[in-house]
Image 1 (cartoon, rainbow, N blue to C red):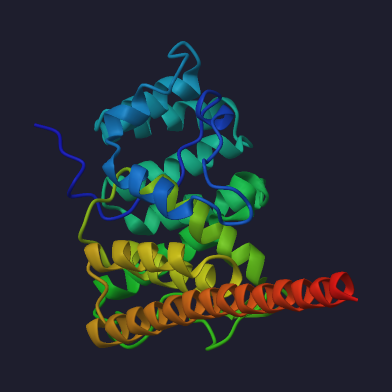
Image 2 (cartoon, one colour):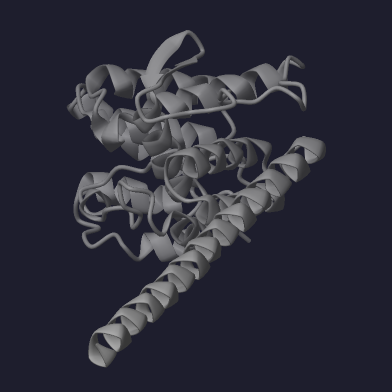
Length: 282
């Protein structure tokens, strides 16, 4: 019986049909936690139904992979690669197929080849796929990250103009945010709790969401990171308390403004009423 709950991680599948379907979250971070939760609840068979044309060779290969027959999918993709050796979709799909089959070394090789062929595909987010694959390979060799070391490290404060250094490469904050959101919404369809690498990405995304857009949404994403087994429980608890405190302070400030505004308004009305009474009596 095929199962997708045991998969470690999945990058993005490429096909003519799937390329037409855009991710649901918006560039300003709205509804992100909702769409990630939806992705976690969606099954691979649900994604398979989005393929509108099985007659296209790339679609047929992707359908085979989504169906769980990775070996057959790899054979089909290799045949496509032999006929058209410069196709980005084939390289990216081979990388994903090998990863699902458990061969992370070949997966990394093909994902890097795909980036060479088209660095801007998937909104230029495939660099994050290589970061995860390299971390998985290191973990397999016993060189995994300690619980207190993050996959995507972030400073204490972040703004939209900042530049982050990830594995020696410079990335704008907006690029990191987009990469985390885009890749997670794809891979969470296949990777179900628990998985450290998804948890790590969710945690980093929550921090960026809190700094750039919505603290409330960030708190929800942090909850997803906990479901996926974020390894540093102490840090997770501290960050959750910090976000909850920020939300409480924000609400307190909001109501203070309302109360002060109401008092000022009442005083202004009373002042006007008194002046009007004085004018009438005169």
